[in-house]
Each structure stands twice: as structure tokens, then as C-alpha cells.
Image (tube, rainbow, N blue to C red; front, top):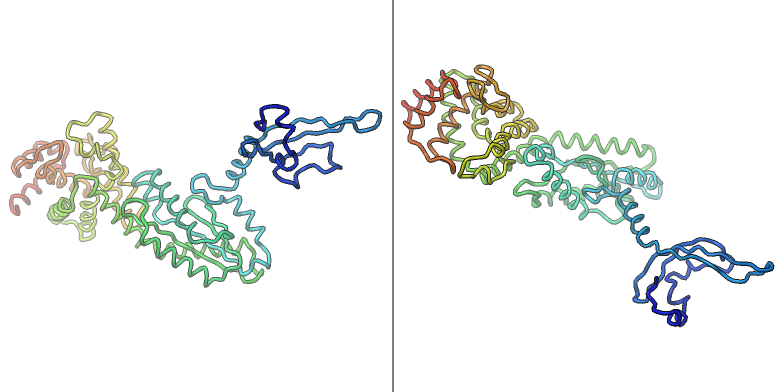
Length: 423
């Protein structure tokens, strides 16, 4: 077991000094009949964990000799250590988990640890990221946030994943002024750190510092959490705007869509909207829809969006999902939730053959019907990897061909007049 080649070689070893690693773990003179664990050093210097069962054999009432069994339990010890780690740590981020955090709350609940500060942090925009580019990228955001937090706290602080997108931190013997300083440095770092392309990490924090024992640990945490929600409410709109702007930028980088294309759609759709007497609020919604109608394509593989040949049936099903993805993205945003239904329906056809719901005729929202016509027209003029650009006359001829099938026939007539008079 220890790597010695012969009985003679083993007998030459000074057992107490060379085999036992830890002097205090050696059995004492009154502990000869027992089971114990210790560490042994192999001939090459490696350490193994062993469990030793030993007993004294008596003859005529007198101890005659020892007998025992030595078991190599190195693998078991490693497994136990791993299981202990998993029982106290979050498997995704490597931070402590909620169970360990709860134990530490009780352990640190003493006068010696005062002032005792608590921090609750919540990642902003995680649901939006999950909906936009998938939960794998959302996990990357969680990991990046955890790694960022690790850099700013001491070894004695307890940094844990509280659950979902929330983190909880205990700082023993730490004043509220020190906590504010730490959070200020974290927020400054967040403006410079990006987890995915140009989307910044953003965390809302709430804190509470116990200076005496008048407030229980449970209520102190509640105070910290409530302060976090207040902070999140104040930051929510600006954070959502930042994430949406970043996603829009990603859309232009990944797709064949351009800002110029979006601007042309805004211009054309507003002209069509005014021609049917839409209100100013609806015209504004139409402008946003024209800009973000294809936001869901950021979650579609670039190879499919830029494929020159015809898509297979399976590939087409993947591409068609962009309407639903765009719906989920905008529904997650306070500022954009009101256009999510229009994005979901902007590929529905007048005869019911569109997707994803197969809506028909006037059951399709007006703004979605407008966006479909305007987008189709501009795409035909601009061309795509899979289709050559058409002239204005050819593009209009296609709109008329599919009027009443794909497009709202009344809107096509009005749009034709707009093009003839203005372009």
C-alpha cells in the first residue's frame, strides 16, 4: 500500500517518523483497541488517507500482540470533501448557497460581530437576457456577477447566492460607511465590465447594518431586501433602456438589418399610419415597432439568417421563432411591453397562413399589418443573401400580387399611393 518493495525494506523504515504524517493522530498507549483514521506517507512522498482497525490479542490474561487492518480511504475522503463542498456551495457560481448562509447567520449573531452588515443584491435584466439570447447566456451573466462580487469582499465575509438572480452577503464588524464604499466600487466596476458583447452587468443593492441587538437577524435581512427593491424600482427604467439598446446594437451586428433599414421603415410606416388617421400615440408605437420588430433574431443562429440557399423545413421553423422571442424580450421591458403583441403578430398573414398564431384578417393588430407591408417592401428593394434586390415597380407588383393573401388589401392600396406620391 505504501509502495515498499519487500519486507526487509519496510523493516528498515523508522515507522513513527516516516509513515505517520501527524504525530497527534498516532494511537496512544491506552488506545490500542480501536478504529481511527490518519494520513500515511507513501515511499514516493504522496499522502494517502487510511482507516486503521486495531485490537490487542491476549493470552493467559496478558497482552500478547496487536492485529489490525489498514484500509486506503483516500477516494472516500475526496468524495466526502466534494460532497461537503457541494452541500455548502452553489453549483453554478461557486459561491456559498442559501443553506450555508442560513447557518452563518446564526453563527455570526453575537455582540462580538457588531456592527454586522447585510447586503442583498439582485441582477438587473436577467429575465430579459434569458428571453433574448437564452438561459445559457443568462448563466454566464450569473457567473460573471458572482466573480465580480468575489473580488470586493474579504475572506471573513459570507457571499452567497440567495436564490435565482439574488445574492446575499454578511459582513462582520463592518460599518454602513464601509459597506457604501464597497458598493460604490462595485458599481463603478460594473460600468466597465461586460459579460456578453456590450451588455453591462448591473446589480441593485439593498443594505442594513445592525449596531445593536434590538432588531432580529430575520428583520435585518427583510430591511436589506426592502431597500434593494426600492433601489431596483428607481433604476429599473434606465437599466431596461440600456439592455434594450445593447440588444438592438447586437441585432444590427448579427443580422443583415441596418439602422438605415430601420429608419426607412419608421418613415414609411408613419406615412401609412397617418394616412389611416392613427393617433400620435399609435404612431409612436409604430415607430418603435418598425425599429425593433426583428429584435428576436438575435437569438437565431447567424448562419441561418445569412444563408444564401433555401432554408430546410427544420431551419425555417427555427427562424420563425424570432417573433415569439421578440415578444418575450419586449414583454420583459417596462417601456416596451405595450408593443410586444405587435411584434408577435408582425408575420401573420391576411388569409390566416402566417405565423405564429395563424391569425386572419382584422384579428391581426393594425400596427402589425402595417409593419409587414412596409418591411416586405423595403426588403425587396434592399435585397438579401437569398434574394436579389428588386426595383420599386417590381416590389410594388409583388405587394399587389399577394394583396388579400399575405397583406391587408386596403393598406396595400394606400401604401401604393404613398410610394407613387412621395418616392
